[in-house]
Image 1 (cartoon, one colour):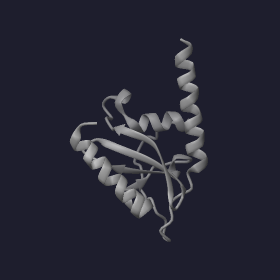
Image 2 (spheres, helix red, strand yellow):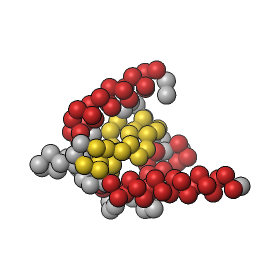
Image 3 (tube, rainbow, N blue to C red):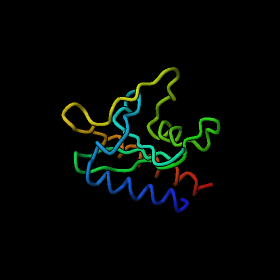
Length: 127
C-alpha cells in the first residue's frame, strides 16, 4: 500500500476495533456472502470482514475493486473463495449491523475461505 492508503487503513482499523460493525459500510449481497461486511478505505481499496462475534472480526480480503479488470477485483476473489457465482443485476447493500447493532455471524464462512486459500497455496507450490 502507498502511504496515503496505509494511513486510511490504519484509521479504519482503529474504528473497527472501537466501533465493530458500525465501522463497516454494508453487507454483501447473496447467500452465504451476506455474512461479510465491506468498508471503502480509499478510492478503490476495499476491506471485507467476517465477524466472529460483536468484538472479534477477521479481515478476509483487502484490495482494489476494479470491475473492468476481474484479476484486480477483490470482490471476484471473495466470490471465488466463498464458492459462489458473481451476482448479476442490481445488488442491495444492507447495513453491516442489524437493527440491534449486532454484526452477521461470518465465523464459519471465514474459516471455509481460509481453508480454500491454503488449498490454492498448496496447489500453487506443487506446480
